[in-house]
Image (tube, rainbow, N blue to C red; front, side):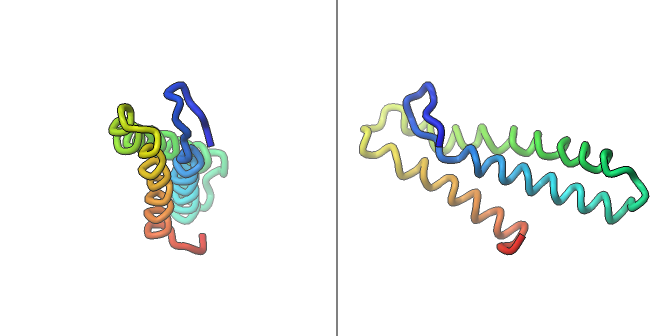
Length: 101
């Protein structure tokens, strides 16, 4: 949970990082299955190279969907959409990578 300069609590930092980490894991597993003789450092660098853009793409969507509409909302209305975005990210991750990863 992060309390930012907008004076709003942010619950989605961990979930954005989770999506990036699962993207990196998928990349590393794919590269190691296709190129088993390649050094592990190369696969991990490629995994990091896919995780960073994924997080960069997901993060502005969170701000656009959950924060921008709530800037002028009353305080009692500010929590539910921000709390729902991490649940949406978790559900998408379970659909893409499975619930037992």
